[in-house]
Amino acid sequence: MQAQGADMKELRKYYWNPRNWEPGFINDTDFLYPFNMTCPAGLWTTWHAHPTWGELAFLSEGSGVFESDKGTHLANNRQCVWIPPRVTHDFYLLEQSTNRTIFVDESIFCKEPRFYTMHTIPITPLLRELMLAVDDWHLDFSRESDRRVGLVLWDAVVRSEQHTSRLPIPHDRRLQKLCAAVLSDISGTVLLGEWSKELGMSTKTIARLFMRETKTTFGHWAQLAKMEHARHLLENGSNVTEAALSCGYSSISSFITVFKKVYGFTPGTLNQRRSQRNPEYEEDQDHQ
Image: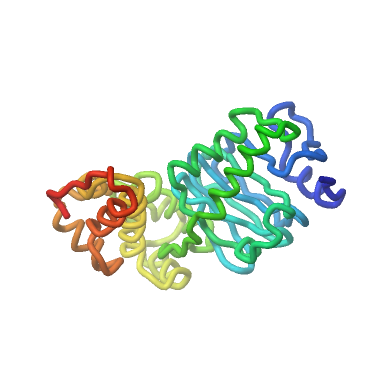
């Protein structure tokens, strides 16, 4: 597999090989390239595109916003962002993050229309372990056994959901910092009054700008963030009590009421669906 020179130049401009700190990392056998670097809060790239490589933007720790003219997407340890080749984008890290992004050669997905659209992908426990293993195991794709591991990862990506988050991300960097505060302490409460000085805006200005950019109030956004977090936990094996407590709810009934208002079904429904997929899974019957 021969990587095109223009693409290598583009990748070299923004990423480097964390194993040996050299800019060149593409060779004739690699169809995946894992990136592994701890990056500081506030890192903001210039606009760029990757001509023949898709980008599976995965932050195992921290959170960041990936933007293109098609929209703004959030990446964290619960969801990654898929960025197709030739899509001009940038990203901004809301907090110190561990960037475990994986680049995928276009030849792997060229017959899959889905991967020519920017979208988010929920991170299941299996997908997470596979994405980490591609780098942690120091795979050599010239070996058939290692190549199969890479292909298993991609098969898991293909089988993953194309997620549409209910959580709109504002474009204003100051508001993104506010969102990061919510996401980094999902069980807590972020008050606009406490952030007014930090952001250099009055609470009324923050509220007005937040509404303009997201079409919702900050309070409702923070509630949605908690529910998205809870849904991720429920879909990956947590029971209703665990999900509620992780979001800062001391009343399980209040949590269930809010969850149903957001999604149209109770959180116990997700446990029931999981039980149907896996008969050995035992749901928590006390709070269904």
